[in-house]
Image (cartoon, rainbow, N blue to C red; front, side):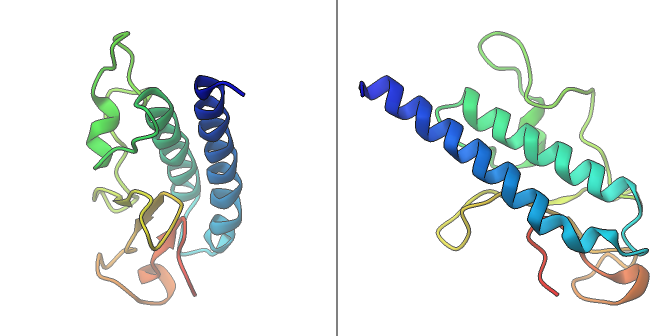
Length: 130
């Protein structure tokens, strides 16, 4: 396999793994405290982060606003005018892949806006632990 083909294969493999991981990680989003907006936003933002990495040599965005920066062809990884806010009108939290996690994390701290909580204050998003 040529070097370019190996890089493309690794990027595609990472995209598939990220998509699968997001689907499994979002299982806790079925609770009533995480309304229907959160799962849709989290999945869409995760896909946009994967798209960004694909267009930027496997580098993930440092923050979600970077999804709005045009690439060399003039397109953006996020297909909209602005990054969505959580249901409580706050920015979603974001962590790119790291040594601790191979996956993108996108989440909200719930209605109260602080870590932890139950009911409407429950943290929810990709990669959240119960």
